Image: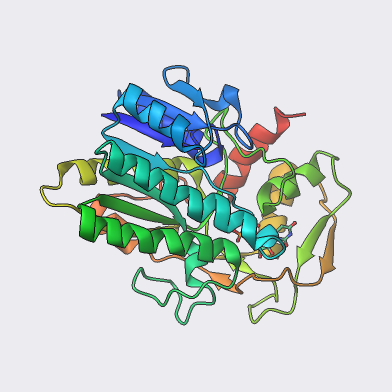
Length: 324
Ligand code: UDP
């Protein structure tokens, strides 16, 4: 297929583009390189440097490339930051997504795989979380993505769009030379590894009074190669569906680890003591987010192949060591 990938130079986007290109798809990456990296774009994919907020540039890319489907990764992702400057998230993640949908409509491109998030659920009533759980984000990042899912429902209903919303739990690990390198880094695993590399004195643990076994937040860490694989399966399902489809899947391993457990695992993997300091909670963090991915396993035939936390952190560590 001809696939336009926004944010295809970023962390999860570039890993997915690599799998698409290796599988023989024709890929155009559309990325403003504000967070992504040119060298992360697979050599068989074309790169157009452009912003999803720039309708003229988006239209030009759509007209020139004629995609059959769009994968939309481009977005801000820092949940903590979204509680300081929500407007940036509603602009980039929500308003710009509408720009993309309008451009797709104008070019009669009606298949979309959307990078959604576990942050839609907020503080879950039950764990593991299924897709029909209540949607009540506790941070503006989650709300900015929920608003897009709601627009997708109407574009499906009124314009016959086929959409797949993939609700990622905590993406981590590296796919060979494609790993996490945000600047500044806010995510737990790469920050811990920066401590192991001597680039930070300690890891700050945000909150140790949560209602969890050791008081720190519990998350479901999922390897990016597994996340990337789910996009190809979702794309195939959209392409093979006779009627406009509206799909929603949680993507996680179904197993939660606390922040302290992640730090401990990284100590084992790296052999570094990784000093940790207990600090106050970060606003907007739910205590526990663990996925039920049964629906994705059943309907897409997806199953995580790199489910162990040790394997996830080891792959991130191999990548982090190449970044010094
Ligand atoms: N966290 C932490 N210290 C850090 C970064 C993150 O204790 O330096 C915690 C954070 O509060 C959350 C978990 O680690 O409970 C995962 O956070 P991350 O930002 O990696 O992903 P999120 O769950 O927000 O998508």
